[in-house]
Image (tube, rainbow, N blue to C red; front, side):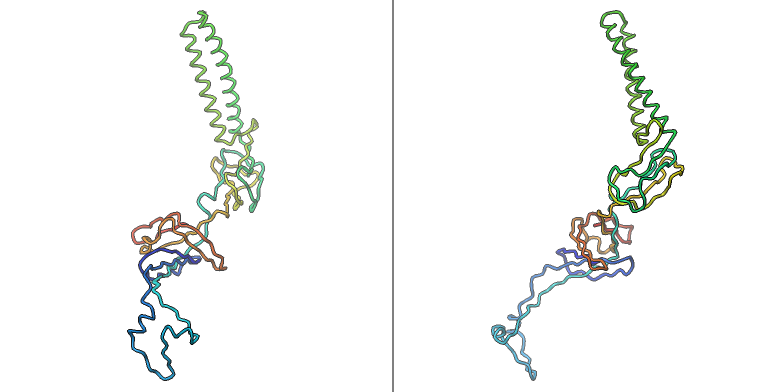
Length: 285
């Protein structure tokens, strides 16, 4: 790939790295003033009197059909770097099983396009059924505790129940509320399985299913991979920079990459990760 990087710097040398899937070319330009014009030099230099050579003054050149080109100091350099196109860090996702269970249905195939929230697989889990039952039990316990709390509060206000009895009932209500929140959180982590213990695992990003790691009937443990999804529309240029050039590459620098097909990809440096002492740095754009 070819990477054009416009920076106002001193003249840089050409560094070539021949390894890698492709290469990036970065150009550094000098900002020197143009050298003295040919008109000034014409007066100072001696004219050659070679046979067949006709000396013209700059003012006479247009009449003779001669176009003058002023030589200026460029001082740029090309930095050739091996690089590749890779999905951005936040454009790929590994979909894992949220609980132990058995795959009962796959909703996608390799190459399928998905959106955020699209179903990937359905899993049946005894643990999921138990968690759902625990949530239902916690809700019932809270309803009972709140009813007792309302009753004892009314009796206490009428003087028919002691403060100690009312405080005990109130504490039981608070505990029942905490138990319900805990059960709800546990169920959410598991993907909110149904009363039968079936949970639908969904994609967290939009993209394309690159890999499926399981199939219907497979038994999974909590955290096992189900699918890998990547969004190819969000890509980065990743290349290695030699230690000597790290100081010349800054975050925010506009770059232009060119692949083997000649297509131009524009980007901006978003991070430079220096390597160990004496090793190359990784640049992402």
